[in-house]
Length: 475
Image (cartoon, rainbow, N blue to C red; front, side, top):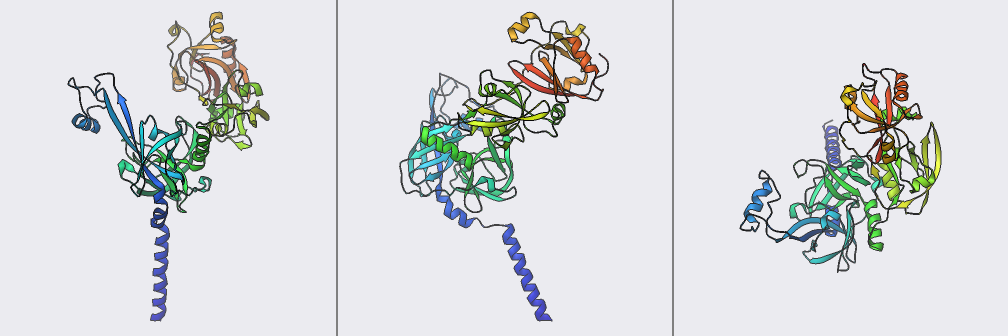
């Protein structure tokens, strides 16, 4: 009996050891094999001032005291007319003849770039090309038979999977940090073309441009950004998927620049309320606010109010998907676009154009119209007036109502004095607004708790705004 218990206990200890091994992976072999392909990048930029200038930091900033003590100063307290600005970053070798991938912001405006390998050799590098929209750059050093990084497929990454970063945070060469994939396909503000990989791997200044590895020792991303309120790591870091980075690298290597597709539309996210107004089963796609006259979408027959559901057979789950898919399409390509229009789907062939970044509905804040305080608000809490002939001519509009003032709970909606209401959308139908009387009669048909979607002109752009419920009083 004792012998049986001893055997059981032995296997129990073995199973615990195996479980612990699975939970806490060993990165040593991966780092040993792939580490030599990671490089340190230091840049120097000569800043030429126009005379005395104050320090570029507030007095409570830790860097203020550093610059005050160590930066050469002019007698009048300003910065010198010329000094060198040094910065650090990381990168990794993608071909044995010296091509290195890094971030565009690492080498931006650099007058001199120095690459240091793990064997301490140093080389001067030149920029082959850089793409600020994706923050990818390709640089070259004069060397051969260099160790190269193995590339993986970021599409095979799973949320929760272990990943590691190797780079030079704060100049500490080949520092290794580990974590897991927190999310995939993240959209960040002002970053229309990259479906970022989010991780909790510790990434700090100097890690930029370094590789993100999976457990097979394959590069799946290029560390690019962190979310931080302090300037240091706070548990949120973002990497550019390696397939996106390599597509950019191929174009930079071949042409020195990146060519992107475009449709010539202004787009907006489809909210739940907007989906209900348009008759969609759920929020999906990207709604077209405006179509550039003479652009690819205009020539194909797309209209404001269309919802783009698919591009080249790929579903548009959110508006951020569209710029990435269109941008990666070669200009001149004929692509099929599935749209939702007036309660049904329709396929439209579009010849993709080239370059400018997709626009997003912008916000402005004009002042109130004259005499607004003396006018009565309608059921939405809006004081509106009809456009004059001169306004229609200047704005190149045939119809619309100018918002003079906003009262009641509507002030919480994304409407502003100076906006022009062009149309009301409900149950998939769009009604153009021409007079105040027509607008108020239309509003009278809605229940008090109903949501109303308006097509609004703001500046040179158009946007859809959904207002939940009517306000008391008024028409």
